[in-house]
Image 1 (cartoon, rainbow, N blue to C red):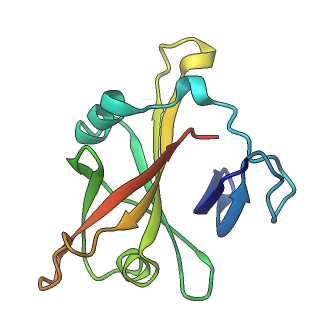
Image 2: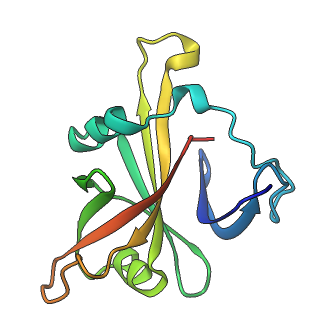
Length: 158
């Protein structure tokens, strides 16, 4: 039985960034490129305590992806922290990423760590976290509000 995933997908390439909202069935071609949505790099995925430590110790690059009102991509570098085992927190000013999260209630956090000393297969590590706004725990009365997001799913980098 196929399950559906509603996510903002971002591709960071040498020439730029592409993000799009999409609904995927497991291992089905995606609606934009016809590419397989199968996860190929599960062996190097960060999960559990290893993922939590990398986030809290800031041992990776972090890209927060959201979608603008016109459906164009928005990707920004932010430094998150684990609020609990199932939530992430960001200190965000009133910027476009914050407005997008407040409007759509969702985002994707890409965690990428490069370890040049590792063998070729283990150099690239990370995860994609599908996030949902926790409106009850997020602060709402300060100019620099704390955003708390629930981790809905952890996926491999690709």
